[in-house]
Image (cartoon, one colour):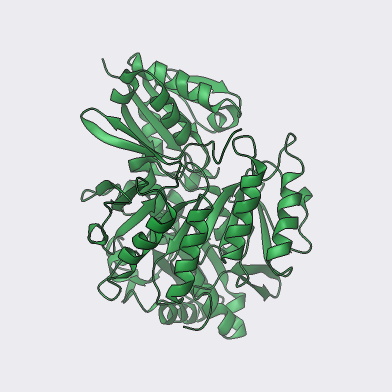
Length: 253
Length: 253
């Protein structure tokens, strides 16, 4: 019997932003592997089994899920947001490459979702309106020197930057250092968006200039979007400002 | 009476990838502005009005939609994918900034969606598994020199690259030139994914090396993902290969 493994993205946390495809995949599976808080969002039946693990155990979780699928189970690995953006899909692929040949023969499906930067951008206006990038600020899996070099390269090239994993208890200084690096490259007036829990009841979206932006404005659940030199702020009387990056970029047309 | 304007992303084209939030926004609106093929996907009621326009008329469409909303209508502007990624949200913001003060006072909501690169990546494996960027290859709204400089910067910095708007009848040479530029910076073995209509019945996902990749493999509906030097291909007997970018990046940990 060949098992099945589906890697599902449930979106940024608002149930209305979970796709029907993701819900159908969840309904069909029997065993659920994931970070506890993501599994908590699911409304599982009594015939569905929940196997939670810590946030930092992605590769061992991936291997456990593949092993269960190879044993013939219908397994679902759950990510918040999109599973392909700094989430479980890459860990599953790494485990397949390293693992026994049988794992290559599993039915593997990956179900995309709305990733955090899209939900935050939608609440702020259109900050990702021209070329942009997504960079994880975690130096658990790459050297800080690589992150610093990437920040300089993309800011210098005029891309908007979405920062994932901006800060945690174990990584307290990286976001402040990233702002300091970006102040060397970008105008200090560049808008910075801190988007926490976008679309959920506890949503907080704040906008600051790069000069004012402070690492303490972010936590683990925040996606930080830093504009390009062309990103603009539209003030609105009695309403939150709109932040957007114009479609036209980089000089005369 | 204050009108309402909602900019909705319907996802990559598979109805199961449209969020409940997007469907609710569509059900609530009365006037629909958008590119004809995107409006064709909607199942509108007889009390809902369809106002289609050409793909290249984004700013005039935005102004017409804002004018209708300012007149008190409940207006929906429809994008495929996510409205904030090379789509209508930025055009709406540009029009608001340039337009009459009343447009700043409208109820404006932007509803995110699954953007093309996420749907293509999910079908291929996890090619966006580490730092990545999204670049529009259209030089209608920015000079080609800027695009070339950005491609060199992001490829040199080790980011995976998702190319939107890779080719059209009016822009036939840009994708081939982009491949030639990237061959100067990246290993020729770097995987390139051509993802057309991901998740739809006419889906075509093909993988080539950067050495083999040809512009003719793409059309207007294709999202092209070019790996980083660390992107890997897992061959599977009797199945499509898996393409992924490992979470660990850029040297010893």
